[in-house]
Length: 338
Image (cartoon, rainbow, N blue to C red; front, side, top):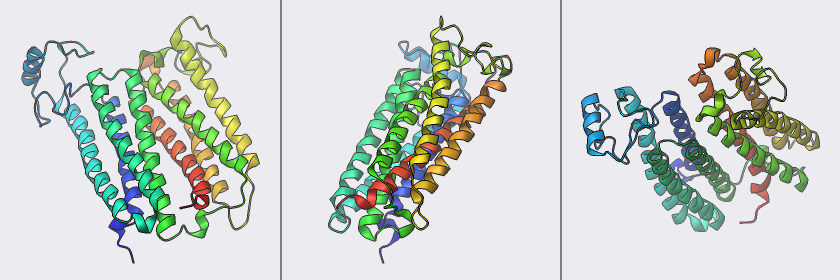
C-alpha cells in the first residue's frame, strides 16, 4: 500500500493550503494591510512583524522613492503587519511542500504516468509566477489590476493542484466508480468549460471592483442601491465605475441563466451522476453568492462596506469556480490516456 505522503493526497492537501492563501490574501485586504510591508521579501527591512511607528518612519526616510497610497504619515499596526507575514509564511510553506511533491511525482513517474508529472510541473511554474506577482502587487502598492492578476494565478495554481491530485489518483490506483460518469456527451464538457471561463472573468472583475473606488459607484441600500443602481435599472454610464459595477451585476444574472440552461443539458443516470451532483452543488453555491453580493451593497450604510462580507463573497465565488472545475475534471480525467 502506498503511504499517504507518496500518494494523490499530497496535491489535494496543497490545494487546501492554496485556498488558505487566497483567504489570508483577502483578510489582508479587509484589514487594510495590503501595504503594511512595503518591501519584499523583508518587511520594513526586517524579518519581524513588531515594527514600531518610529521604525516605520525611519524606513520611509531611508527609502524616499517608496510611496504609501495612504499618505506619508500613515503607520501600520503590529496586527496588520502580522497578517501580511502570515500570508507570506503560508506561501513559503507551500513552496517547500510543492517542491517535495514535485520530486515525489518525478520519482514515481513510471508508476503514475507522465501526464501527472507534466501537470505537476505546470503547477510548480504557476507557484513561481504567483510569487513574482506577489512582489509586483506589493511594489505597485496593490493596484486593483495587480490584485485581480494575483487572484487569477492563485486560482490557476489551485486548479492545477486539483488536476494533479485526480490524475495521480486515477493513474496510481484508479478513481472510485462514484467519481466517474461516462453518460455525458462532449457537449457537456464544452459547456462546463465555457461556464468556467465566464465565471473566471466575473471573479476577476469582482476582485477589481472590491479593491478600487469603483465599488461605491452605485448607491447603497435596498432597492436604490440593489438590485437597482442609483435608483435605476439602467443608470447613466457617464462614470466608468457605474459601467463596471452595472456590468458586473448584469453579468451575474446572465451567468445564472447560462448555468441553469447547462443544467438542463446534463443527463441523469441512476448509478453514474457525479457530473450532475457536483454541478448542482456549484450552481447552489453560485446562487448563494448572488445573495451575498446583494447583501454587501444593501448593508453598506453611508458607503461603509463590510470587509467581512466582501471576503466571504470572494471565497464563495472561488468555491463556485473550484466546484465547477472539479465537475469538469471528473468528466475528463478517466477518459484521458496515460
